[in-house]
Image (cartoon, rainbow, N blue to C red; front, side, top):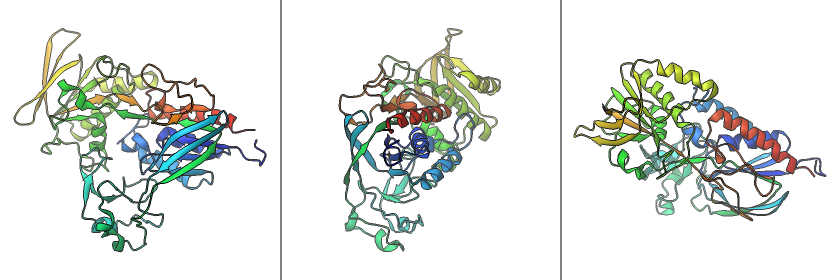
Length: 420
């Protein structure tokens, strides 16, 4: 223990499920924690899911429990709209420099949405991956933490407009907020920087960005979510048509020398889960899954086996060569069946690309001596100093339950560096 009877301070970089878990566990063991997140909300990629493994329940139920623990913790300080620029120093004695962007909305906000009614400016909704718009002042999603509106300074004209200011009955809008630099002394740093989806537009033969009815697996999660752009109704983006047939294309950008060489681990199960989304909404819909190998480790093998038995689900072992579109917006998926060596062509209403996970690594943080990564860009478990730690998908692709367990273990390691 430190001389004042308290443990030291831990910096957690990334406010997704791994970062939230690590922050809560370290704080409840007595540490002071600073949780830094670049977005205006906590929850990361999990917040964008419709359902997640292994419980297949909406992420809001699990996240709300975590958010409540954060709200009631006297030891966690959350810095959203913030990025760690650099970390200097050595074992047990680091200095972190953080740049915090302006939210333009203060803590008096009650999320009443009066400001939205007054705002005349629209922006692309990045939480819904561009499948819709919000006003320049917006709530990222309905259960966001902090439950507080934010203004997109990139599109808001500021005081030249200012219509939101008199519309707010709580004087919560401050258009003159400025960025700030924060410096912290910490004893350990946890990178929970997560992942980004592989940019599917780079895969020329699969039609993403050219054909509106070719979407990514993350876009599919938002379509299936009740808080998504269609209220949870899975439909074709081009015309709102109901789904009669759909193809899932596995390893879109993964296990490919031209793109990502690694297996992204969770994509197979993600598509199997999304096939169930479709079958629940459209009992007569035909589902095709084009795969190289189906990877469903351990207890999740039962989930794969149950999906495979569905007579409306057809699994085709073969890498997709090409996707084309006809004048009606229907798509044809072409591949070679590796088991029969025959050419396969399936016509469908919608194609979902299971894009791979791109590691965020150090998250753009400048670190004295740098951080060690593996050949794929994930942080390794062995860094130069034992109190520079990685959690969850920062070090390997994995599903939510494993991220939670891993982040708990990493928090316990951080505690060792917070004792004198």
